[in-house]
Length: 357
Ligand code: PMP
Figure (spheres, rainbow, N blue to C red):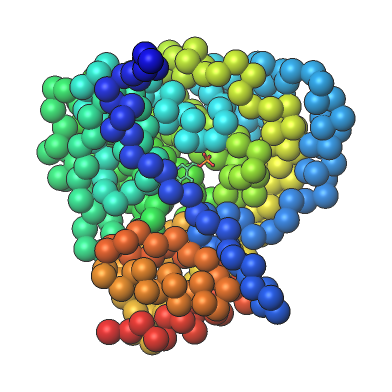
């Protein structure tokens, strides 16, 4: 028997992506999923309606150029259509960026712990991860990241707010970092949670992108806009960079249903952003509740909070599961808990009382 051809060597080294699990059903108990930073609100009726119209045409391919979506994004953000790339989630844009810009062995600098898809995407591109530890309060160490950049560095990723630890960098700090980054390095500003940021001097990624040709901003419809299941992300970049992202994209990647829902969501943005305000208020309630009983929770700028539990992480996740709430444990490090329904958040506050000190 001959064996199947072997994939490229790097493929065997791709770490597994561990998705947030759905909660196990519990008779008599409403269960909640706070493990994937999803939006707990159901889609708006108008968005469902727009998407449904395209469901009725599912025998047809989508508009490959996603013209309506590109036009809506360009109008909303004041950028040229040529500065945009859409894809099946912003995670796909990160894959495409690495595929388009990295040769095997090129280095990609990013903070760690951060979004767990980064090491997967870097290894899939046969590039090399250079992980720079976040500070004890879960913040990017931008000085250390700048110092980690070498001639081999092709891409640096700044995840702000940082998933899973929570803090954002300031605009001034990012500008300072960008001033130290040589022009051959593309800097991805991953703004998956940008709509949830409430801080002094927040990053204006689009302004940075206008100023600096090596900046790429990635964003998503999965979080604030509540379209995680439909998979739509977008990048704003210099025209040649955006063109490269589009060139390596899968043909017809973003479905027509997803395009229609994204366009309808931009039209209904004010209503969706009111929901974001409510989630931010709930985030403040949860974080304040935790700090008032003695928890040291990092700054939380996304739709989630980080519990730095170290060795107690899995016990905490099990205790949450026990009360019907699934959270996201990173063994030996901490647990990330999305801001969800009030009842779910209350249960977390209750469990957290038992894990002090
Ligand atoms: N970036 C960050 C920091 C994220 O947390 C996520 C989702 N968890 C993504 C990108 C990707 O989101 P999506 O592919 O759904 O757009």
